[in-house]
Image 1 (cartoon, rainbow, N blue to C red):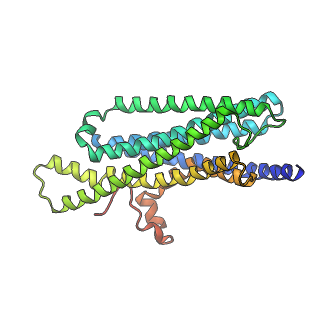
Image 2 (image 1 turned 45 degrees about the horizontal axis):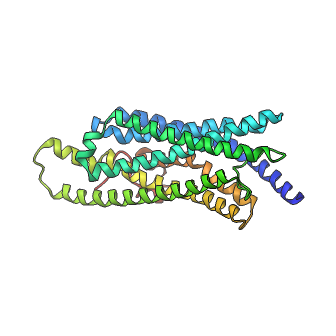
Image 3 (image 1 turned 90 degrees about the vertical axis):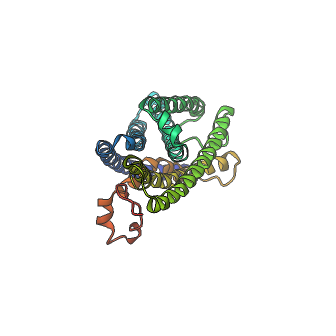
Length: 323
């Protein structure tokens, strides 16, 4: 028991250093991301605004995830009474779960939007409106709110059954039936999201290659149609499609270790507080990695780091894609 206690204390000390760094860096990166997207949003035509609005929504969600989770972490680690600790823990768990799920849903929605835009253009043109986007954001928010509440109720019961506050998400194998069902649903949900994103991304990239070849060899009959196809193949639509592929990889890399640790702990296989902490920290790094992906897609940023990091030379920029 003393060994486990000392290891927990060490992890808490490490977290006291890592979390403030992640908070500061995450706020900075997301602020830059939101500013860049807001500037680009007003520079493109009406047909190009939907991908930018989707990206801006994800940026705002990730920014709120970093800020509000950081506030919860600060309240939790500075509380001196049990009531304040419970309040901080409640707030932290709710905010983390809400924005995590909302961020993932927005990524999936963006993937489906890209799929519909290139596979069913007439359907996309008919239903692509600000009203539909607002309804989509409301549905995603309500869904995230519902499951954040379920997670909160199950974790509060576990919190009150121990003698000290839990600073990391609940990984114990003695979880309630509600929490087990919640974890099972979350696992199936993540698998479904990754399957949908994989299918959408592969389909979109293949269609972009076909359209690119046709655009080079075809003779445009009208200027408006040609410009729309060019924007789809070389403009912001194509740029956002390539960006979404990388964000999908980030979602998988940051989410799968957390789900693996939940399965291991529920099955009493490979119990490790260190592995639990690493998995949860990787998951919390998602809103910090996403803006970095976008920033590295900027042509001006890539031009500055290209001489030092040649691996970025083949990354598609957000403004200009070469055919």
